[in-house]
Image (cartoon, one colour):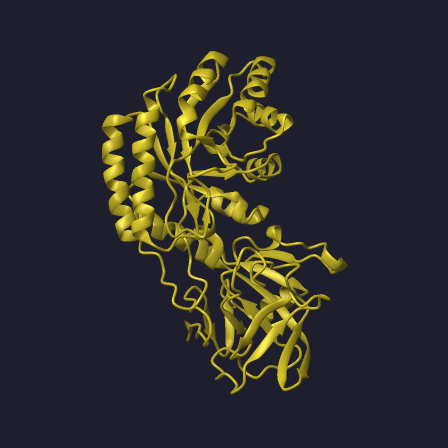
Length: 415
């Protein structure tokens, strides 16, 4: 009989993975068997069914008119991208390298978009040749886009990424409002739209991304409404009708104690109002949400093996073969001001009560920063046990310094 995996003190609960007979289940398999199948530790495992469930939950909560795009920077693992390409309506990439992965995974170029503040001329040419939508983020990008259009005999498909004059309140990272390297300041967009028209580029719409990792539905609703209103004002200056309006994402997932799951109901209601208004004000426009972490973050775990147990002046350290070089964000070195623990478990001792004294889980690197879990109550562990770090499906392997100190690269699987 499968039961929800039991959460332990000192971290946020996780509800995605179950356990049975004392073992965490990933992709329906006991963790120890999955580790044997992989053939080594450490590894990341992404549960394909959990990803599909998350997309289905979103579809049920949001208006049918809203399209879902996967922001590939969250996790560019090719098998995972291929899985998502058949579940969502489009893919958003941030480099030519990601573009190649998306196309190889079967994504429809008509529904692939490219954002980033420093696109190289060669990348812009690749994007035009692929027929994808380029989110223009500076006046400088227009000349190479026009040149590629003329050379290739096909007008570049472009949208304008707008740096709005407001921020997404309570977001983990603010990507709009005030001076930012992302997008074009809203007050400069009319001039850019005129230049797009003169350059003969195929204008299609706007992209607004105000922030990320937000757990407050009311803040997301407010930002989406402000983004829509701003797009309506800017559309009056556009050289062609708006055919796509990307409202960004910002949907967060809980990592730490006291963080609630995001309430989708008010967001769905707000987007229903926007979709109804857009049907009249922007009748040709597709309304897009661009989500990364929210689609995959909770569906992934990082697994490492305990290789040593050390007691230093009364405190126990579980030393593992994994660490910050594979999972920088879990170590607290990916933007945390005050370090907090990700949800952690001894994956082959699920249901075992925690020991009386806290322990720390550390990696093999020669730096005091290599801490995966600090002073947590975990079951008494042994050398060879498997440590599982939850909420690890986003900004993991690709966002970590895997070459640091020359340790082996991490393996990724889709289970």
